Length: 283
Image 1: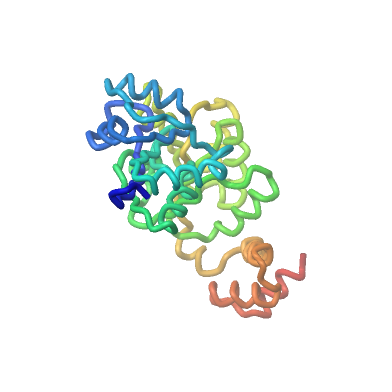
Image 2: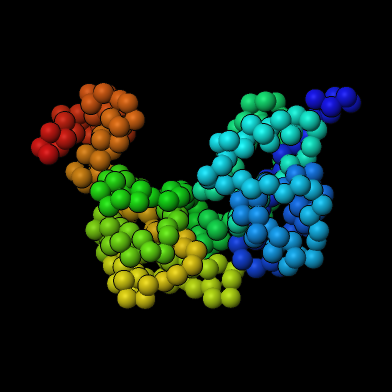
């Protein structure tokens, strides 16, 4: 700790998704005035600073998935020494499917202040553009990359009534949409939001089956955010057998016994335990 007893603070900086004009005054000030700027991609930070017409006077360090475990303790010590650290990712809010959570948690555990310079979010931007219900939604981030694990997760989400927001890499989009159409039904409304706020921004609104065909033919590129309508209330009263089985498997994988997993799933959906037991063991 510095001689004056002063601790630093961590600032989470919301970066533009693509259009630099979306940068807030607070974001500009945070990047220009911080003692240290931890960036997911230092080259993008330099380019963004140039576009914004600001000079990053502080020390620039990289902070990305490959080094955040090692760099987090270093940055916490920097905060203890009284420095102001600004954390910025390639776009959107740090820690939302981007590096940041580990550092936020470590700073809070060390009793160090954390604040935020709010900015754009692909989650809420895509949700607003989708034309789907926005009163209740849930964010699932990136689904598992492998087909089997992805289908298991989708089966567990099939009865979710809230609008779903997901991220996906462009080269996996067609396969994910095909799995979604199978798990949720080809007629479930959805929207693919691509390259938000950028020159080639595109929002394609179709049922899941149509989106799967479009993605397979078009091969879309760029940053992808997918918004999917929630299940109709009637479908949510009793999830499909596959979804119940997947929820039990997910609970077991998390450490629950099969008996406890079956009991929890049965209670959650108002289904008799014996019925869930039969479904699980019928496999």
